[in-house]
Structures are given as structure tokens and as C-alpha cells.
Image (cartoon, rainbow, N blue to C red; front, side, top):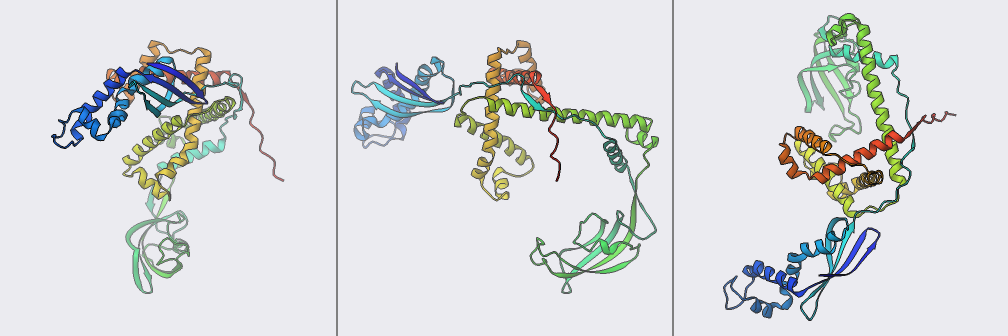
Length: 433
């Protein structure tokens, strides 16, 4: 086999290759043996017609396309892969010519892994917020913990905002009960805005045993068209009035909601947890800003095959999540008012950004000579094994070591960028006029 020419334009490689007649003939023989059982030749049972008879009947080129498919892996490996070209996506044969001497000339096109001209990736500046915890945030968390252990008790007094009523109700439109307007033993928290405007407000001041008639009007934009803008009457009977009793924020609360004996110990622990969360949020935002700058500073073109592969991967993961909730990707797309094609288009920009960043980080890893040790590789396999509940040796047959190594190098490159970065103070918000 002879590579006549190989030209690269941006990320596309075009290779013109000559295939000797012996290899092409071998491909034709394989194609004949694979396809003869599907071909009908008068006077022969299916699968029994000689190759020459089939070629005479259907033309000498009848097996050429299938023959190329048979020999293509070997041709592609020798013409492209063995030459050191790093390809992405599926190659295609854009032209084929069978010569008089029965040799073959092919033109192959394939997208290449992008060449990267790195920009600045050391000493990159990005804003990083100062993360501090306020007393108000600590109090809000204490309130949340207190509400988690609050008691709801029946009281003998008029209902007020925040109380919970146990009620029966029946809604009538033009004197006739309407669908969804009747319930018994319903617990309604006043102020929750669960019902249409006016319903809860007219129950403030009610006591157990009260029966009320509420004259109301459904909102004009109500989702049920038959009720939108309609005047209705609700018959409501109040069975109980309940109030939420929130415990005081004291040492007893600390004992109830934590392992601490005093409120001050609980406060200190809340402050520590909130500070950790804020620090992590600030670090993630800082890292995200750095990655965006590093990716934008590099010069490269992303092959469409890489972007589409990322889109496919994201869709597959999202589809898996949806199916665990009893919904398909197609149903979700329709629910958003579109179709799967439109959904693909919507996530393509973010997918391309992810691919771009990964390629740039991989280029940084190469530029810095970052390597992955055998111990690090094995540790990552062990981690994945525990995560997916799969035997390590079986996992190695599913996820190639090269893929794991690349991921680890990318992580190291990311860590290097962050370690070498310069954190700046965030810009002050513009003053309002």
C-alpha cells in the first residue's frame, strides 16, 4: 500500500492512498462470501451462484463497496494511525477508483485532534470573593433547626396567619360542585397561598366548629379554562385550629438537634459549616473563572465530531436520569415545547466549551510534562470500582487505562493552573444613582 498524499486543512485530514490489487482482491472475496446468500441468480439456488456469474449479471463493481469496508480498517491503520495522526470521529471514503490493473485508489477524510496554541495559563488573575459568615446567617440556620423540631398543637382560639386549619370544603359554581373543588380533612396553613386569593384570608379569625361560605372569583389566568374568571362559593367547615410551637433557641435546642450540650457550641459548629461551604463556593467560582480565561486564551478549532460526541454523552447521562424518574428524553423535550433535535442544539454551545477546556488542559499537561504513576492509575481504578460496585479487573476491560490516564493528567493541569493563579478582589457593585 502506498500513501500518495496527506494534506491537513485546519482539523481535517485528507489522505490519498493506493491499495495493491492483492489486498483489494482479498476484500472482494470476503464481500462475495458474505453477500452471496442474499443475491438471486437465475438457475442457481441462493448462495450457490459463482462470483463470476454474479459479477456478469450485476456488474464487476457489485462487491467493490463492501470490499472497501472489509479492508478499510487495515488500510486506515497503515495510512493514518501508524503515521502518527491522532484522529477523532469516524473516517469516511470520499472517492474510490478501481484501476485497470485491479488496484484501488481511495481518498479518505477524517477529523483530527486539534492543534493547540496555548495562551497564558500561569499567573492568571481572577476575582475571588472573601467568604465571611454573618450573625444573621447563623441565626437563620438556628431558626431552620428549631422549625425542624417544632410541634403542631391544637389550640382553642381564633385562627391567625401561620396557623394550620383542619377543614372540609366544597366549591360550587352556579350551584354545582366542580372537579377538584371538594375535600375532607384537609390541612391548610394560613399564609401558604395554596388556594385562590381570598380563601385563606377569609378564614383568619375562624374557630373550631365554624362553618363559612366564601364568595370568591377564580383568577382570569387560571389553568382550568372552565373556572378562569368564574365566581364560585366555597362551603368550609373548620374542625381544628393548630399552631406551630417553635422551641426557644437555647441549650435544650442544641441537645435536641445536635451532639452539643450548649447553644454556643452549636453556634460555633454552624459557623464552621457555613464557612466551609462558603469557602468551597468561592473556590469553585474562582476555578471556573480561571478555566474560562485559560480556555479563551488558547487558539484552536474544535472538530465537530468531538462536540457531537460530548453532546451524545451529555444526552445519554441526562436520559438515564430522566428514565430513573419515569420519563424519556423525547417526553422531556416535548414538555419544553420542542423536539430532541432542538434540545441537542440547546446544549451544543456548553458541550463545545467543555470540549475546548478539556483539550486545552490536556495541552497544558503535555507542555508541563505531567505524568501519571502506576500507583495513581491503580488508585483511580480502585476509586471507580467502589463507586460503581464493579470488580477492578473487569473495570479495566471496560475503561481503558489511556482514558483514565488522560483524565488524571487533565486534573493535574487544572490543579496547576489554580495553584499558579492570582486571586484578585471582586469588583465593587456599581453604586445606584
